[in-house]
Amino acid sequence: MKLPAAAALACLVTIGGLTSLPILAIGVGGSSPPGCGEIGEVADDGTPSILGPSALTVSDLRAWWNSTGRGQPARLGIAIEDLIALYLSEGDAEGVRGDRALAQAVLETGYFTNSDTAINNFAGIAHYDGAASGSAFVDPIIGVRAQIQLLKKYVLGNDAPLANPNVAPRAGASATTWGGLAGTWASATTYWTSLNSVYESMLAHAGTAPASPDPFDSLDALACPGGDLAVSGDYALPVERHWYDENPRWFTKPHHDYPAADIPVPTGTPLFAV
Image (cartoon, rainbow, N blue to C red; front, side, top):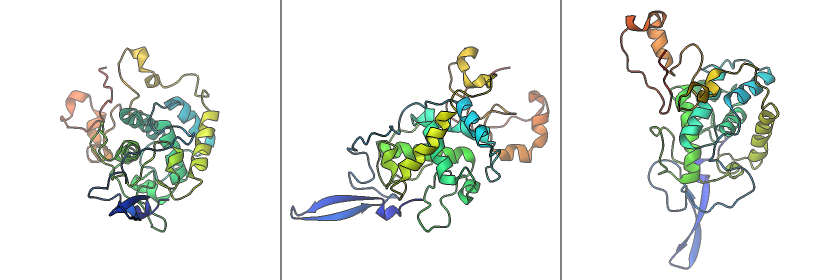
């Protein structure tokens, strides 16, 4: 649940050197005043940084999800195993903690069961208190990317360089730590406590992945200088669902028997010749 955009962040400005009034940063369109919605001095609150590498692997997180016994969420438009991989690959691309972003998504969506899950909004983006729903995103990949990019904007400002095309709204507040999202990203002052509780449960299952892990978890063994696959499963590339729905026979034939197609692939996705 979010604060209304116009109440996301208050800044004090001096008028004529005499009067100080609260000016509220608005995270929609236009330019924000310096210090409002842009990176500034954020005190270290003792909680982890939003930026940085993930501490947990795809296998760790899949093992944790399996331990919950929840299976495949009905409203989620992608296999949960693939969504987990997306969080780490998109997080790696932008330098954001993908494992903690996944924990945030679990908290925001109630384990991917709320109505925003069906519109690929996994972080309550623009779902203000009292609103029926938040922003809709075209597919799960873009939904994850928007969350990761918005987290990066909270830390580095709205002009932060992005690895992929910008799909996230403007940040209306700033935070450098996960604890700093309480009262900014979400209205609840207990947001960090709830967020960390989910992540601690993930940590409790770290290292309990199956004895035969997904070979794509460690690409070093394949001598391929890449990161985790964005999507795994029946197909190696994270193509949009409509390619399958509109042309089901293409993917049942040898590769040389179906037409060439331009398929969008996230930057950094490793490709393999078999």
